[in-house]
Amino acid sequence: MKFTKMRYKRLTQLSICFVILIFLSQAFLIFRLFQINKDLLNRELNLISQEAYTKDMNSRFDNASAKDVPGVRIGDEDTHVQPDDVFYNVDSMPDVDKSSSMTVLNIGMEMYLSEEKPIELHPIDSIASQLFREDGFDVALYSRIVDTKHNKILQSSKKDHFKSSLLIKSKDIPLNFQQTKVLQLVLLNPLRGILSQMIGILLLSFLLSLFCIYCLYILQQTLAKQKKLAQSKNDFYNQVSHELKRPISIMYKAVDSLLNTSVIDNQEKREKYLNISMNELSRMNGKIDMILTMSMEEEGMLKLNMSEFDILKLVQEIKERALEIASKPTDITVHCQLNQPFITADRDHISQCLSNLMENAIKYSGEKVEIKINLSEEDQSMFLSVQDNGNGIKEEDLGKIFEKFARVGTDQKMHGYGIGLSYVKQIVEKHGGCVSVKSIFGKGSEFMLQLPKVQSL
Image 1 (cartoon, rainbow, N blue to C red):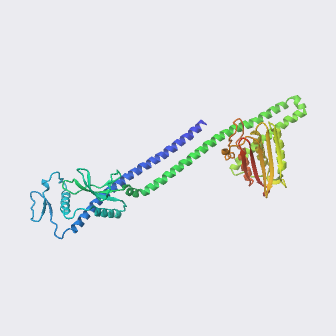
Image 2 (tube, rainbow, N blue to C red):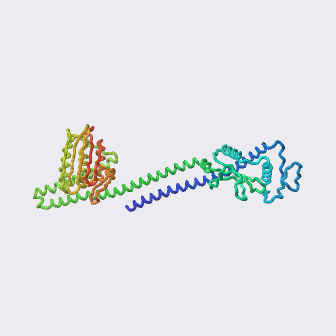
């Protein structure tokens, strides 16, 4: 038993660890995919920001005055300046990065162009949004001009400046030679663009997570049921051993008494001990048949031996038998409202069902037992109820009493198999009927059997 508990506990721990490992693996993969998509989006932003700025600059050149735009040259020793050239002597300017002559040239063109056509941010936003849509991204963005030296936003296409850590900004596009005045393109909601590229893997991950949780739930339920079943079977074996030992012990004493010469010569005592032995053998045989019947029903091999018999006569026989073996004062009354007491059913199994209900009524009642048996009929159905004044059953336990090996709300000193009511339910349903129960805790219970009066033989 201890090994079984440890095995179930270890299986539960392993299943939980396995599911957690799957979740952690998914989380790591999703995080890595998020980082990759974020880097790709950042590269896309840098390319688009530069392309949008270039297109805007070309557009401003096209809209500039009709006169030719003068050339822009970087001054050095060999530079020869024509009279109409615009000339920027970069060498004489402090803090100028001259590592990229193309960048310096673009800055010079921007400075010359801004005198007549200053840069405007809204056209850049429109061009960048169009470029993103062409690449399959639906993102919100804005552009701004920043003074990097004083960390100050000089101009923005949005009135409200956003400082969230979720923002992604492009590389700086310098607008002056010292590169302290730069143009930036900023994505307002980069997560939307990133997640739109991850929708497939996120959906699969979500479905896999749900499947893992469902599997874990089913596994836990299965392990719990198996654990409960194993416990119930162990209890069942213990109870069966006790119940079978009891009649054997009684018969042993009866037979031992019969070995006494004075008892053998006394006809009354001899018949008494023989009747005790026969009753105990009959009870033990009935219990064994009930266990075998339950096993056959599980295997789908149970076949009923249908015959026509008098149900009222059978009830009277079970009543007399119960009164003989009752260990406490017992009063059993039978009320019959049947026009015709004959029904078609398996007499042995119906007899065992009634015996179980009667034994339970006596076993779980107080010092004085009162049992009422009612027989009635309606259309082609016969109703048989067994009502007692016993301990009753709690409302929360009513749904469990017909489960195999279930013994709810009972005194642990009361021995039993825990399959009696399950047997009753299976046999009645095998006949095409049904069984129900009404109970008030502390006052008593009533079991109602409904059986078809006529069945095909």
